[in-house]
Structure formats: structure tokens, C-alpha cells
Length: 258
Image 1 (cartoon, rainbow, N blue to C red):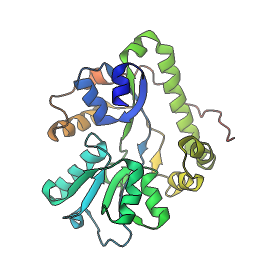
Image 2 (tube, rainbow, N blue to C red):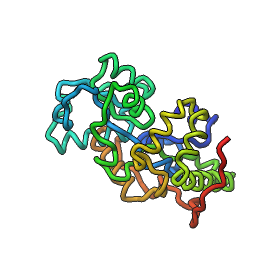
Image 3 (cartoon, rainbow, N blue to C red):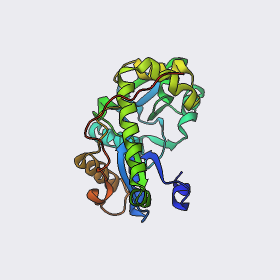
Image 4 (spheres, rainbow, N blue to C red):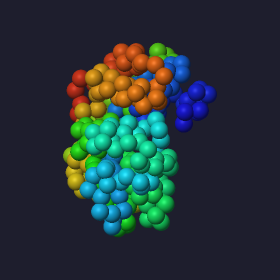
């Protein structure tokens, strides 16, 4: 995705927040225009694990989606809070779809990633929730809408329509979760029962409201990324965020399940 964006074949996409900052640092003219959702990430351990907190995972293998992910930053902050040294947990990067199987076979002992991959292990009976992201960092941010400045300048109407569509479909999904599962399942090539589980158990596992990025939130993410060595220099948050396309009033979109 990153290379496709750098090559000019992709003008907008959802991307993990620290990676968007890294692209900006590398000189790619992109801006964050909106959020995809809030919360919706989960720390999963083996079903038979006795772990009650992160301290109990010392000496274990823990998978994250990428060093550029917010999951990486949050789990390292939790380690700091609980007095766990980075050397005490073996972190590995895995593609999110591979994580449930890796947990089931014993290749890893825990993972932290966005849904529906945590819920898959729950439903398969191989994993259990250690933390929901919202329990560690309320209103957790993972994916952001990243748009090239060229599209913003040349076709602002497209960006405005894209942001409005995300906002209104998110508002609809909040109050039509069963119907949203029917629509999302084939689109994401996921089992409908799995998507329904993600959207309803518990209902606040993932939220599609409060999607406006705020400066303090992104300053916090940038500071954490800088401290972790992901970023080499401070990010100008005012240059990173483009909030002019966010609608002042959000009405639920008129969506019907097929």
C-alpha cells in the first residue's frame, strides 16, 4: 500500500496512524482527513493462559501487526506502566490474518491487532480477551484516512464526498449493527457470524462515531512514535491534519442490506 501510494497509483487509503506520520516525515505529501473508527483492537492470549495482565506475559512471544502500528505504541506504553522491560517479551510482526492460526498452533502466545482477527480466536475457542483497546486507551485510534495533497488541491469535491460518506455510513452502522454485518461480511470476505460478533459483543468493541481527528490525540501519538524511534524528528500536527472536509452535521446514510 505504501509503495502504491508513493508511486502515484493510489490517492487515498486507510492506514495505521504512525505509518501515515512516517510517510509525511519521508516527504510524501499526505494529510490525515478523518478516522476509520475508534477502538476495535484487542489483546488476545491463549484460552488456557493464566495471564491476568501484561506482566504475566514475560518470556512469551507477542505478535503485533507492524512496528508502525498504534498497537505497538500502546502495548509499549502499557509495558512501561506495568514495569515490564522490552527485552522481557519477544515481539514479532505478523500479518493480522495469520495471527489466530499462529496462536492456535502455539507459534505465539498473544497478539494485539484490529478486529475481526481477535474475535476469530474467541469464536474458534483458542483465545480469550486480555484487554480491549478501549480499556487501555479510551477512544483508541488505529486507522486514519490518508489523502494525497494533490487530490485535495485538484479535486476537493471528491475528498469532501469521501469524508461525508464515511461519516454518514458510520453513523448508520452505529444504530444498524446487524444489517451492517450483512453488508460488511461479503465486502471483507469474512463470515457474517464473525462480523456480527465484532459489532455486537460487546456493542462498544468498535465505534464509528467521534471520527474527527484532534490535535492533542495526534500529538500524543507523534510523541510516542518519536520516543519509540519510529519517527526521527517531531511532526508538525497542524500540517498533518486537514479537517476542512468534515461535515458540520452528520446524518445516517440511507443504506439497505442486499
